[in-house]
Image (cartoon, rainbow, N blue to C red; front, side, top):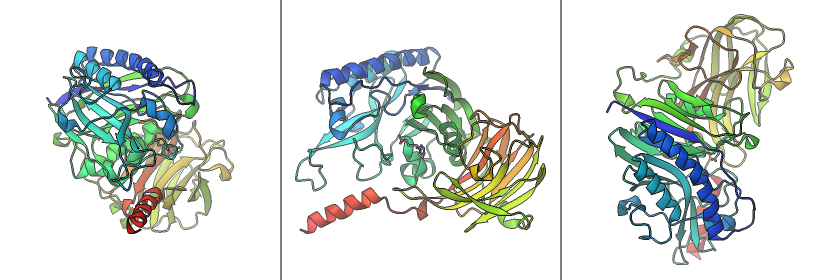
Length: 484
Ligand SMILES: NC(=O)CCCC[C@@H]1SC[C@@H]2NC(=O)N[C@@H]21
């Protein structure tokens, strides 16, 4: 079929009441409470004609764990090549009540079910990398097909900083599977910021749709969930089904069904406590569509124009720990250029109204981001400062009053991986209101219908990332052990 209906469910995870280790029965009781809610979502999705539903990372037990306390929640998840339907053969690989229930929910509702659970793999001293407690523990996505068969298992490769309960897989896994409604790939949350496996799935393995369970904490101005995930789908030219957990205290909200053209449906709500089911009809093979976006040369326009207006003063400003070079947009309309290292950003703009209460800047950043894992960003951004005090530029700001009659942003990027973001007041996206030209300009079509927070070209230079410190440590540690 040309199109299919998909669902993502933003789930308010019921968290364990204790941080202490619980019995396997108590762990299962908590997971069943979460699965009761997910089952309601799965039934509703099936009733609406959906072929696949994605549920969030940590959606069945939460995230407040140590290595020890998560253990009762884990199951041994086999390689899908064993052809297993847990619903009809639940004990084939030992105790697996969570896989059994997920499989039955898929089978009973004839829908693909995507969930995130924990995998445990026993090991011993014959394996020099075996942890001292005798097991690997992995943050794992699973997919069950309409018969309830396990068709995909993915171990998260890029663990986020607090995930000490899990091990890093030795190698990245590139998991894909075919369906009558396109080729799917899968990865988890923080993975989206790195080349492996995310970019490889979209470019080399040419998936149509990425399944993306996430537990994403929003960080303005560039990394709120809907903002970045929508931009990634556009930059990579794939569908992205992003299911976030909903926990407003942790700033976790923002899910969507994103396409190469922008969001088909999205949700951001930092006020309510409830979860939300999102439904949309998507192209099964977006690359075959006649209006599939043309390839973009991200630096073409920016390298061909002269630097605008030499008299604009620049100043440094921090976006969290990254020091940007900013230049204030003092006039209602104009042309600006700002440069940092190898990156020059150009902006042509016209505000509809220039308020005395708001200041906008053009910013550039070319450097390594991150304190432990260091990965290279090139960013051009038009952003609203938190207040009229220029020292607040780059600090999170959720509201604005200024609409733009037009903007056109470009940069001399040294990478093909650039993600176009446009964010309106109230952390809202701008579907259909902007375009990316093949020469790399990100521009408004007919001005902005709402006041503007940020317009950003978010570039990733994967080849300039520093080696992952924990992976290098483990590698050297094991090499040393082998030499002894
Ligand atoms: N569960 C995860 O893997 C969450 C990671 C994504 C969080 C994104 S990555 C950079 C930003 N920093 C945050 O605290 N949230 C954002």
